Image (tube, rainbow, N blue to C red; front, top):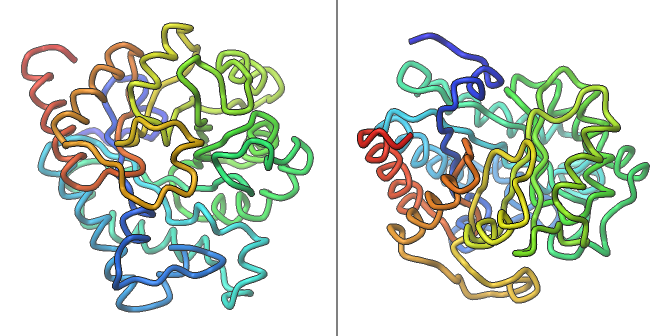
Length: 314
């Protein structure tokens, strides 16, 4: 098997499967307690919690290995900004590096079976469903710099900014990620009309970020929406350099989901079909799960991808 770099996979037009939900699954696990500041990033410092965290990653990696599909995985650092670390009982620890080490070590057990690429994950400062809380470009550059630098100094394969509701904060993140040696991807939350939550047309957002950086993102993704949202948005596309979606199982809009305590899920086979329709319509390469998904959903999606390959459809 020829070892390709993370960037190299995109020239093959091959599908990259992502993990499903980790954050939401652990948040709803009665045996696991999230840290008030760092959420699931702090679980690496508790033996039992770290084992529960690791087992979820193992579940997803086994699915990729059994299907013979390359996979993208993400460090558990969505809420591990320098600001949050400084306010937590883990102040002074390199939380981002410790989370990266955990995931990269798990990945080693599968490296001879299928490629698994680890991404250093960051999120927005505020609520991912509330664009009014987003930072402006300059503030975002400064705020996210310590976490981006911490992840950039690890052996992750790429950087990934997920669940971004506003273009201003995405611009600052992109400019800071561009200064690292890592390839990076920007992922937005969008509406069915093809706009980011702040109202910016997705195509305009992509063009703006691309034009103001000498080292633009490797690509762009969508996450934390149901695949039917992307399918509707694509009617206002195509969107240049959009290559992936991590789909929710809920078809509710962000305003309905914000603070929604019940898990609004979908049957795995139905979810997989909806995801595959979005992949085909958008000619995407990256697909996997976000809120509401678990190993069953990712397994159903992997099985569908393998079946479509056998039929010569990808």
